[in-house]
Length: 416
Image 1 (cartoon, rainbow, N blue to C red):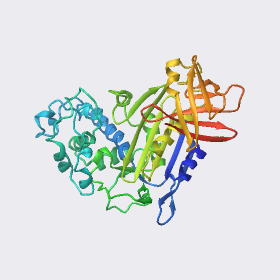
Image 2 (tube, helix red, strand yellow; image 1 turned 120 degrees about the vertical axis):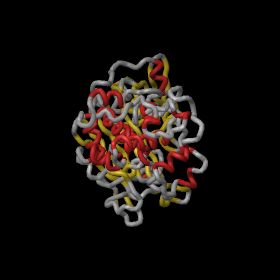
Image 3 (cartoon, rainbow, N blue to C red; image 1 turned 135 degrees about the vertical axis):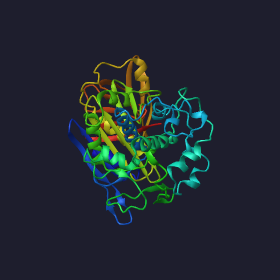
Image 4 (cartoon, helix red, strand yellow; image 1 turned 90 degrees about the vertical axis):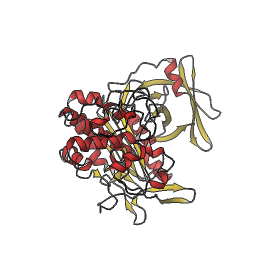
């Protein structure tokens, strides 16, 4: 695992902190690159990163707690909490906001967002930005990712609890779980060990553009560490946060694999409950496999796709032991077709994966194709050889790349 992340870091694609744990055992806990490049301060497990949309699962859990307390009806219309809600929102409910099926247009996709993201805003002024915009579809008839919906959920939490969003989450979630390095990020706060965010450009890495943290709200405003997020996953899936029925509802897909604040993906016998996040200077990924009690956390302070790719790779590696949820039986031909394609190892090297007569084959350059045998899940081995291939998936469950383990080395390749 360390070699895979280090390869990405040395290539200039990743900077951040990574943690992987299974059954209470920490497999990898390490920082890569710098929390502050100007002072050369390294990242580690106590570095605080902006989470972006990983925040949404905390917002969703807060709503579920209020539902358990009888303070929020998931199926009541928005006018229950916003008396002046437009008539178009009559069928917009909390349940639909949680699953992005309410049709509320996403204000961060508006043409003026780039010119307003650096300006302080109140919750009411944010809602005003999209309240009079036409719905993307009739509530319940589609799914479209909407940060606006989670801004509305922030308002619901504050109205129902009588507390600010930040205070309610701190008192209800973070303090009971001992998450001392997690909270709502504010630009003005002097926050020890907070990472600076960076953006790659053709001329090199630069400081990320300013984003006022009053904008993300419950859609993306939290910060945390990899150590604290492990406490979160252990607490949430260990039954310390929600009642079993609420946790099941939270993680049951509603549409297109999206549940409440998380994706819940079933692929090749594996269940992955995950979400990624992105803000200026930060990209993050967090996933949990409930069958193996496995957590993967990748927090990056350099914009790019590396956290998603690394997260999928680390989860695939953690699943290589044939535990429940994986099948040693050969996949059906239709499933094998999902692995087929060209995987780029380097600018001048690639691996071709093909299917013939119900069997998967690997071919490098002009060499003869080599038959692969199913081992477990997304892992295939070369019979009578010492090499194996682990296919990696993105957050949606699609095959995104592979790792070739051969001669004591790990070769990482992305599907083209």
